[in-house]
Length: 360
Ligand code: AOF
Ligand code: ZN
Image (cartoon, rainbow, N blue to C red; front, side, top):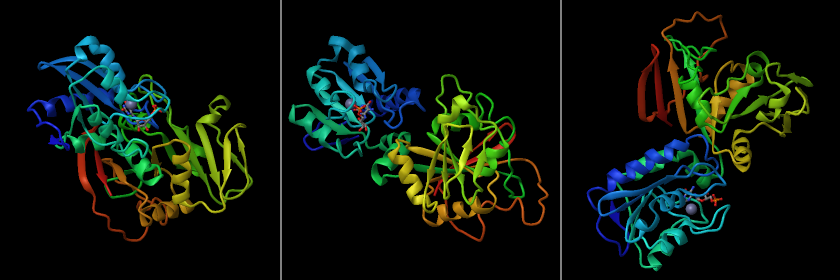
């Protein structure tokens, strides 16, 4: 950790407590959007006396739960928070005031809050009340990764987009989620839980059941169905009427959609940049762009995703199958030749498949 202006030196244990904050924050993964995930630990005399995390937008922040947990023991304690405490009245009152009232001695922050209403003002308010504040530099990257989508939306006004595809060993896009991936505990189910929305082609919506997350208590993502150059009608047979609010159709010409109740947004031109802005304005921080059945118009849409640098992350699943494609179909994910070296690539084995994740 590094001292903020006028702050004390970091202790050896700071990294440990900050990692615990991140662990606590992740308990609410998939539930906090458009708010960030935040965890807080209160430590006094080398002992953890309170813990908390932000469970859901609209509910109290992490600091409030941790301070409640600590009770009077918060006095003269150190509060660790994975994100700079807020200093504004939003849906909930400022956490800075709660920390000041509880008379904590110092505060260790994982990262400053990119939200312009807060950005550094939370730290300044604590310092003005005589509380030492330091930013935990070693764990900052961990705190940033925790809220990469929230940060992206705050800084760009667009949803954080991750391209997902399943490939055969010979590099062909396969229209399936590999080996049980959408089952509970499966990687696709996990993705659906963590992302606020999934962008798919109308081809896919017409043909297959929209997968839902099977994780316990998960909220379902919003399906964003791209209907370009459609005739006047799109039927989504697998979407039940009572689930109509779980999908939105973006189209370039007026169409009717079945089941009734699905929102249809007509755009002059389906432009990815404005699409991601629209989704961010509607409170979505992250979207999965699913490359299943992505022929024709949808594939060219995705090419521009790359050209316009609108994709931040790629998740590829490599199946141990060799696909024989008909000429002109089942093509490679990106037409033409694009080079985009990935950063921070991680890979793991899952049910005999290989999962690759990297940042563009
Ligand atoms: C914190 N601790 O646990 C969270 C923070 O509408 P509200 O009141 O929930 O405020 C939302 C904003 O507060 C959010 O955009 C972000 O800037 C901050 N989130 N801050 O100190 C927390 N979740
Ligand atoms: Zn707060």
